[in-house]
Image (cartoon, rainbow, N blue to C red):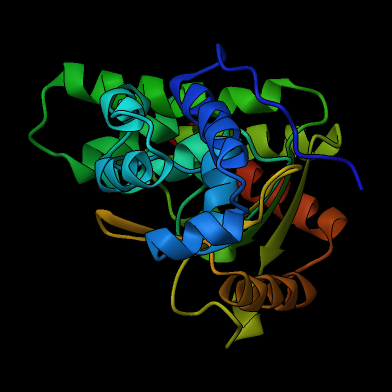
Length: 280
């Protein structure tokens, strides 16, 4: 079996901390499980810290310094690793997303952030922050579009999205914005950059009625799941729980339209929004 990926410590503060954590842990002859036990976390969580897919919080940094006798190194340096342009509840998930080898996402009501266009993102943020300064909205939109640049790579990450039909019917930003974002999604699907399926209204009950779901897999760390709600989010690393969410996603995909039928429906919806624009 291949050994763990060796991170480039200069690539990011989290990569630096992860590489140093792995070095100090191995120097102390501790396994990931050994260190995790002393921190009251799983061995997989330690692996995620070392791979840079999880943020090192100050309380963990202080305890790691005590266990590994690193003279405050991790406590001193974890502040830089925690800086983020994203809201606190989503920052860790966004950082993990950027390193994922594959992302599977179910969205019940909105176009997922990685697939949003500027007009759609702006309308969504304005709806959620009706009194915010325009400069604040500009910053939110810029961060959202920057996230989507991970799709500039031709193959990685694999992105597989299941959209509830509500997400392609709700006119966020109006007909023009919807026509644009739906054509953008269809174009990504037609050139085989993403896999997209639509879960139609007539499916009725399904495995994720209670909310959205994002699954992230990595080449050198255990998988993660992310669940979000209104102004809140939760990153899940427990392997058994992540496996249950993976089953839920598989059931959703099995209930959804095929990728080809889904693209046809998305394009039909885009045409309908375009017709509305022309009639205005």
